[in-house]
Image (cartoon, rainbow, N blue to C red):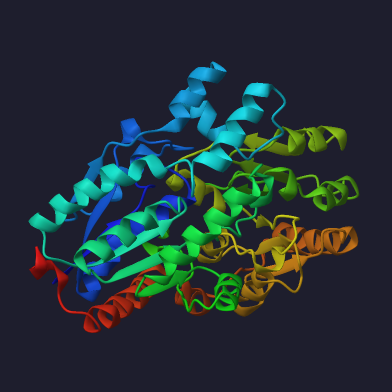
Length: 438
């Protein structure tokens, strides 16, 4: 069994979609001949937007997890604003409009002094801990994942010092991430951040991305990448016992900011009062502007807003639903957005109602897997017809299915771990065993 160091800021007890990718790699890489060792931040030093302690039980007992301290600017920001750290992280520096001078100053400091991101204070602690890991385990390769993209500085440092083969895994773009333009960065800061990105990523033996759009973006910059998309774990669904309550549920899981407000859906629901058993539930961090839109359309009795729930409860809610709601951010360049939740929607086998660019990557994935259909942001008539079609089939006790298992399987976590293992085999064959240097 060969040994690989996985470097990730988000790891249980952190919750949310960012945790799942590397957590599942720890589960399935050993089946492909690679034993993971995880390097992550200690929970008491971390800035997590959500917690899901139940996920700790999913960490394989034979996988060592090394946790380190971190210097956290969110704690200082919380003290300045008179908030708890948890509240500060959930609000974020690039979220809703910031009105006070303190909020504007904090955003400016984050954007210009903490490059590439506010978690950069973890890097020196992680590098020191990584040296001890290399002394204790016969590590042959390193894989870092971002965001936060400061994690890639750790891989870069180990690559330079020990000539360890290094793979940079990008779950979201770096300088091209959708909220980048919301940061009040100076020209110098933008230039420096782009320079760091290009310099660091160019040194990796390989780069992996989660969407075709990210592949195209990096190709334009002269950086080759391997597509290893996000996925779903069939084992997560195996022992769930859904308990339908007799209502036609449309479920959305994840954060919903103003750019994801499904205005056309609210209009469609107002035109379909005869679908009396139809209900919508939004599970996660739902922006106040979305809740105001629901009230404006007088849909409070048909739309429920739930707070963040555990990953297990979220999956159970998917299985208890008749339709799963996907909304792609209404921003420039959104044709390339494919959110991680879509893969678990596919794994759940329930049909997906998508709202977003009909020629985008998410729409293509829905078509490829026969999981559902994407509608334009203004297509109220199309949404009405789709809702009525599924509601009538459900009422006749013949609900329409989502992705067939044979099409969904290509996005299962075991298959994706196999792709990463093959890449690890390739990059370690091209370089000598670096652990012998220590």
